[in-house]
Length: 124
Image (tube, rainbow, N blue to C red; front, side, top):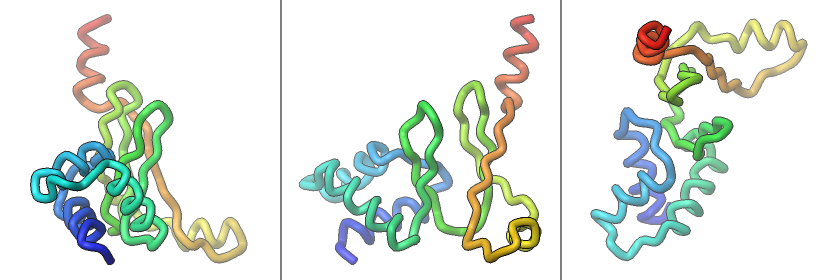
C-alpha cells in the first residue's frame, strides 16, 4: 500500500463523517502538500476495490467514503444528511428469501431528519 493510500485509509477510519474525495484531499493536502486530487481518486478506487473502505453513492450528490465496519445509513431526503445506524443484521433473512449466499448488502433508509421535519412544520 502506498503512503497516500495508507494516509487516506487512516483519514476515513478516524473520521465520523462521510467525506467526499475533495474533503479527503483537503485534509491530506495539509500533511502532503504535493498530492493532487487525481491521486486521491485513484487511491480511493483502489481501497474500494480491495474492500478496505465503502463508497456511498446517492443520487444528485458526490460519492462519499466510509469505514468498512458493518453498519447501515439514514439519509435525509431533504437536506442529504447521512448518518450511521446499526440495524439488525439481515444477511440470514436475505439469504433465506433469495435462496443463495449473500456476500453483503448496503442498506440506506430515507427519511426526514428532525431539523427538516421541524422546518416543514414551521413552513405549514
